Amino acid sequence: MRSITLFAPATVANVSCGFDLLGFALESVGDQMLIRENNVNQLRITKIEGQMLPMQTEQNVAGVAGLALLNQLNTKQGFDIEIYKKIKPGSGIGSSAASAAGAVFGLNELLGKPFSSIELVAFAMKGEALAGGAEHGDNVAPCLLGGFTLIQSYNPLRVVSLPTPEALSVVILHPQIEVKTADARNLLKQQVSLKKAVRQSGYLGGFVAGLFQNDYDLLAASLRDEWVESSRSVLIPAFDEMKAAALASGALGFGISGSGPSVFALCKGVEIAKKTAQAIRHVFDKTAIPYDLHHSEVNPQGIKTL
Ligand code: HSE
Image (cartoon, rainbow, N blue to C red):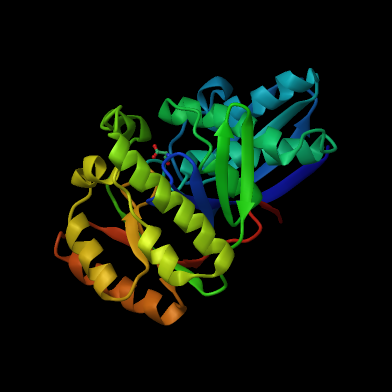
């Protein structure tokens, strides 16, 4: 029976300026998965280590995404999936995305690559819908493609890979509290004013231009969120203080990673990233809530076979 073992990276979605559209992959955090052919004509989740998650295929994000792919192909071939979870569900760094994207990537490889990367993004989004109630692609796209990605359009689905300026360095603080994506989405206002929409479009366009032009000042001026942050940051203890400390340390920007509770800072260079990490650690220590602090580069490759 053929099998594949892979690493599916954690991801930061929204990146402040691109709600549901922009995301990037992390280098140092991610899940491992093993996918193996079976001869029972079924897709099964046979093992999950590291977290308590549903084993029933239809209730597991990897299962749902995998079924979407297999149904499209109309194949009888069955597969077993083992998931070794390092990314906590509800952490805001793309836990469900890693499982969903890992499943469709692995199945596609074992089946001889019948689907394109964009098609894999679409299948993986079915898993996201199970986890968070919405088919958003801003975690699964960077997980599958690596680097920064932009969903230019959902219908039809069009995903653009963006360049990563060399000196970008990332700090992630993950408070050990759980925020469900579905709950965090329910907090959002369903309407924004035209003025805010204009400003936010400028930030997203500016950020994308900054990536292409290696313009760190433009990136810093564009890492802003007038749509979502104020509704969600109330769920994250010491958010405003951490943001002030990160910006005072020279970070280009600081915001909520995906739907939280993790927060991220993008920095120019490792030295500023270290200083920023220290500063937000110092602030968050006062809350007495346990946390993980990760330092990472942007992962250029996305999912990789081990
Ligand atoms: N764009 C999604 C949201 C990302 O903010 O709800 C969830 O990780």
